Image 1 (cartoon, rainbow, N blue to C red):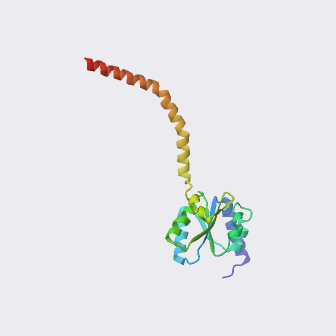
Image 2 (tube, helix red, strand yellow):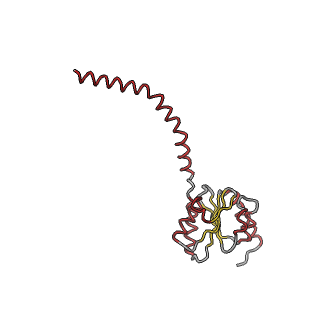
Image 3 (cartoon, rainbow, N blue to C red):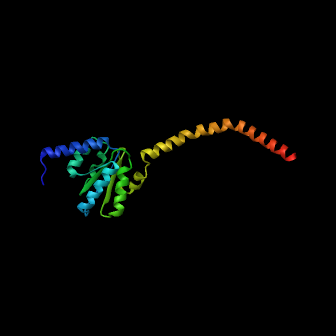
Amino acid sequence: MALRLEDKQAIVAEVGEVAKQALSVVTAEYRGLSVGQLSQLRLQARESGVYLRVVRNTLARRALEGTDFACLQDTLVGPLLLAFSQHEPGAAARLIRTFAKQNEKLIVKALAFDGQLLPANQLDKLANLPTREEALVLLMSVMKAPITQFVRTVAEPSAKFVRTLAAYRDQRQANG
């Protein structure tokens, strides 16, 4: 079905706006996947906060111009889908990695993160980035460690004094 000029402009505008807000993107070739499998992937993408779109490569090139993902221009060849991580940098990579394990016909072509083009074999590195909650927990534990150590250090002299008194009491009771 041929797209009208207005439809093409709308697609370029929509994908371009998503690309400006996205944290990372994964491109994957979907050749050989059934409609049901693609629908399942789209459903999983919606549930995980990933914007997934199949776009003509010429429209994708125009949409990615002027964004951090312009580095993908040369990799947009063949039937590709674009998966944009909107809230967590590794969300799209986790989604594609999980789906590709079950469906070998989904082949990762390239990724982009922070304005840098990454090869497809870097998918696991991007997918293993911590989620926002995990990063916050890690940050809080790092911030909490010096304070906890300080409190232990300040409390130790009085705790040592109490242990000494208890040992003296126990010794006096044992001697009778």
